Amino acid sequence: MYSLNLYQSWNTTDPAWSFMETSLDQVQPTSFFAATYLSNTHNFLVDGGASSRLESTMKEQTISYYDTLRDTWVKPTIKGQLPVQRKQHTAVSDDQGRVWLWGGLSDMSTYGGPNVYYNAWTIIDTQTWSATYPQVDNNPPPRIDHTATMISNKYILIIGGVIYSHDVTDPTGQLALNPVSMSSLLLFDIANSQWITITAGGNIPAPRRGHSAVLSLDGKSVIVFGGGMPEDKSTQMNDVFILELATMRWTAPSIKGVPPKPRRYHKAYLVDNFMLVAFGLSGDNTGFDDVNILSTSSWSWTTQYTANVAWLSGNTSSTNGAVRNNTGNITDHDPNSNIEKSEHEVSTETRIKAGVIAGVVSGGVVILGGGIFLVLSIVIFKRKQIKRKKASHSNAVDPASVAQDSESTMTDLAFEANSAIVQFQKPDNRSSIHYASQIEDGEHFYKPNAKSDE
Figure: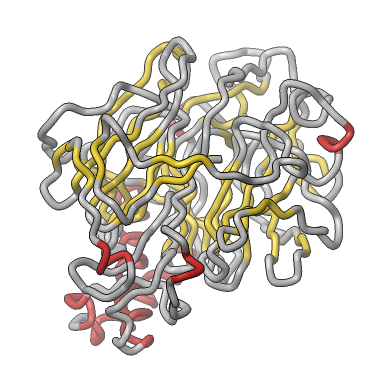
């Protein structure tokens, strides 16, 4: 375990890493796990992953969290049915202390059996440490190596990856891992427990897996970096694309400076105006140990990280005063949170719902190998000595959208009308959504076949 000091300035040639003296007795060494930051407790949770050797503990609970105040790992006792062992899935957390696990794969490296792919939600309540499995009628095909981004604690946006579905090029109709177009986005409506398919437009990125996605500080867009080609493990990318949530359109900013080497399975985090990109795998499965910095204010790759101590402490409004990780969750106090909650909700809801309508209208109604990667644990320097206020709001504010209050009623009605009839689109015209699903241990899964390949 290493921590990166954000309270001091450093250069990418010599990042301010420090070794953490922690006990690892309760944590198995794994790769391809899912992790998310728990904003209400300043801890982060790790679930699942692949192991080079199956021990007795790998067949049991694999959920642990790291307590950043006590600098120790904790393995909580999960009530109810334990989540399945899996890898290459995603985890995001909301403001109610719930962790949402989705997708992924179980195989010989996780539970010791044949490949099983997942498409149902598992929710871990970190207040009670209990697991639940909500029933959703319109679950999409199983998926791995995607990204999940929490938006306004109301929606979870799924981007990219590969889906386990029928390969229409195979006359026998076998199931296989197929690429999914970056124009075909999945949005999960938490309140209504419903999936919505969005067809994004604009400058659409190439399909990819093992990429990163972070929510911008103003909550208006999602920034995607890198990843690997779905059907060519030796080809990686180092491009940057932005998904504007209000219009669900992709753009590619013109970025100055020298970009990081192409990679997949890296981690990205937003800290003030900087997006930190760390670790990952190259095309020949060589691991990276670097940290790269993208300035989102000047859109340039830079080698210098400049600490904004006042911003980190929540004492300045130079930006939005929030640290967001790759799940899009606020992990620090927002100094601008004196704005009424109703305004937060109206602005964010209007933006997202407008984007949903834009995506639906543009699309019409239509039917790893073993490379180990690390999670970038950004531990704010000696939290014990910093008094924090609990974040009273988790939504970013768009002042311009407040003026649209008079239009919100029509937007809501249009959203409800459209979302009621949205069905799944066949990504890249390569797959079908018709499956014979089975139920095992409370999860939807699909049986493997000879054609399945990671």
